[in-house]
Image 1 (cartoon, rainbow, N blue to C red):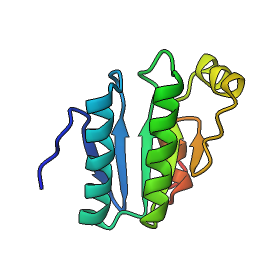
Image 2 (spheres, rainbow, N blue to C red):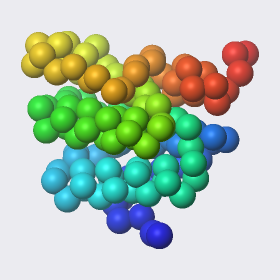
Image 3 (cartoon, rainbow, N blue to C red):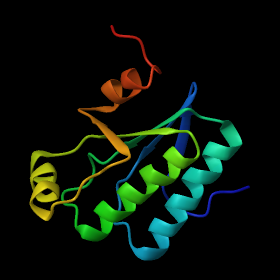
Image 4 (cartoon, one colour):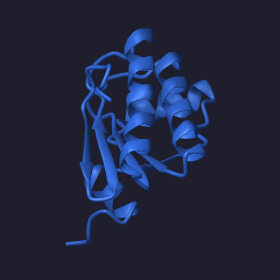
Length: 122
């Protein structure tokens, strides 16, 4: 199965790693979710790290997509970790009252991989 969207998903051991660096418009968001679920199914990954350090802002649409993707991954038995959140993005999510629910958070990719057991401390 080939990827449908422009957001790459890499495998690091038993964990998937993806960096969102473009706006998640409807078609891109749908392709991203489908690609993530397909990669989980194909690889049996036990975790996914979603790096949003490339996003300057997060609106309700992006917050919903991220939360839904985390919930979908969890239903498939995969832990989702959101990393690289800028302070202004965190503040916006809190002000919007958006609970990320099924998504855990970590400061950066290294911490996210460590949280999922994909990288030793060092």
